[in-house]
Amino acid sequence: SLLDVAGGHGWFSAELCKRHAGLQATVLDLPGSARVGREIIARAGMSDRVVHREGDMFEADLGGPYDGALVFDIVHHLSGTQIVTLLQRVREALKPGGTLAILDMFRSDARRQRASAAALGLLFHLTSGADLHSPAELAGHLSDAGFSAPKRVKIRRIPDQDLYQATAV
View (tube, helix red, strand yellow):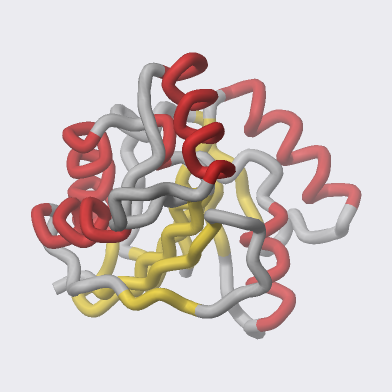
């Protein structure tokens, strides 16, 4: 079972369900996003495996326990405190040893940033009051929320985008 937090379209969950027989996914998102996501998943013929639930990721009952969770493309909109709060909620919804995958844009731990990361950080600051976080900051937030140290997973990359995996401890 998989929880996809703020998963909107549900396509990441659908693709994982296609690759893993028997996997069922629950996508939690706000009503408008969940409505559109349901339509996308229905057109793909995946409604029997991917279910959308409406709710705010900070308030809704996440359900569970799940074997894994996705938190994709949302942490750049959140403060450090909000990230820890969200990750604690996700941790509580996972089975012990459950896997968390976080895909997002990150800035470097180095003092000098790539121009693309600096521009994205400015954009996110202007649109949501947040910023890109560094891998070291993410590791601290994960630890505070009850997860193992994250491992970076190699993927085809968009500049500054990374996938990190951690385990509920």
